[in-house]
View (cartoon, rainbow, N blue to C red):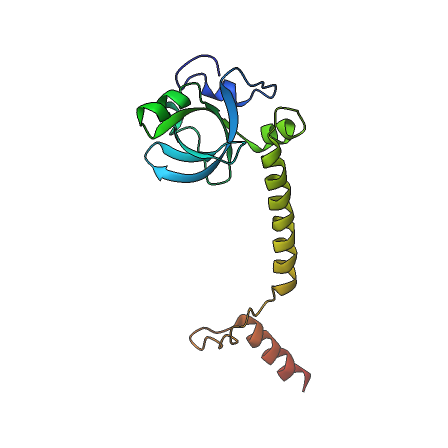
Length: 164
């Protein structure tokens, strides 16, 4: 992402054509550790900690399972020196961008299977919810509220009185 600060973030988010630069890779968010630390999984299946910069915090939100572009140029140096944090998030990938990248060669193979499995699980769970859902949901029927006069009942009583 070119430019700095929050003022150019919105413009950078709307970019559809995106290519990875040297030292950048696509990773999946595994866990949110608090404040600005997140745990990410790379294409090899290894977990590491990444910093979510303060400039993103009030304009972009992430959750477990989201994909981010991470600058891991100092990762080996951080591991050698004993630091836990080895990456910096440079871009949050949104649904449309993920769909475009999944079709390209830049998308890691390990995430292709995860994305397909999660979409299948979502469809299966939605189908089960539709089949299982009913109006009652196993709850007892509601009792009539005797504190209110139901206008529909008053009309039906008056109609039956005029008919006799």
